[in-house]
Image 1 (cartoon, rainbow, N blue to C red):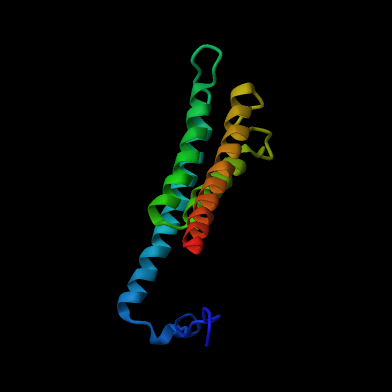
Image 2 (image 1 turned 30 degrees about the vertical axis):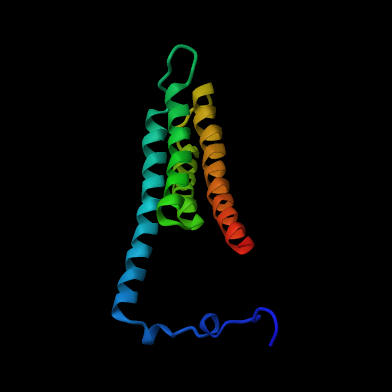
Length: 151
């Protein structure tokens, strides 16, 4: 047969979970645990940020911008560290969950994130940075994939 094969027997032979080795099961548990911890890390960044976003340096919302940069860095570094873009998504999802739940008004009318310039910088800047971190994580992975395919 000329050319490259269109399928690989190694790709088509998936083992059921019952036949997985104990080492493989442990690896899956560790990976799932890492994803959960990344979600919790993002949620904690959002939680801490919701209560400390109002710090300023003169007219600049320094704390809000720092928290936004932190979630961006967390998403990018998580994807890089685990070598999968899904790892970059987990802190962003945790950040969104914590930040937007705390941004909602309670039945009594109180809010944690106020409708101020620093509150907007924290929420919108953090949202943009979390989304950008996820995009960079997925773009970085697809860039590595396409460079491998070209070889």
